[in-house]
Amino acid sequence: MIHVIAEIVTKPGQRDAVLAEFQKIAPAVRQEPGCLEYGAALETAAGLPVQPPVRDNVITVIEKWESLELLHQHLGAAPLQSFLQKTQHMIESLSARVLSPVG
Image 1 (tube, rainbow, N blue to C red):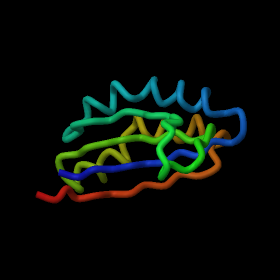
Image 2: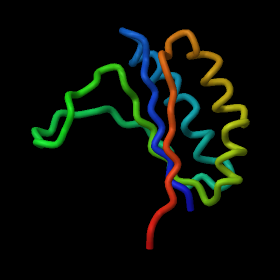
Image 3: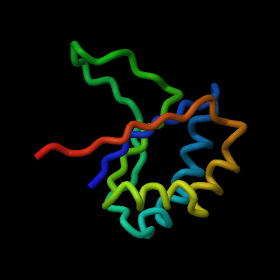
Image 4: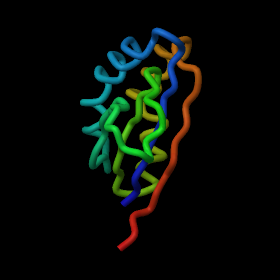
């Protein structure tokens, strides 16, 4: 299994529009082969001493895939490509961390 923590940094004032487009494709992505989890989360102030300041222009996508191969298939699949095309002018940057669980 592969875990992915993806970060979408939106341009000022664009977070809600990007999130709306993400919500449109999420059900289709969850139906892709090997998708175990796929959802968006927003930063929330929790008062933890180790927590950095909340960023209002960031969407974090939390994903789990059965394999790295199936993750690569997702990257070229129509739902994600459609999302990227529709939101490219609203996004400042994209990044992802791919993790292998321990144990």
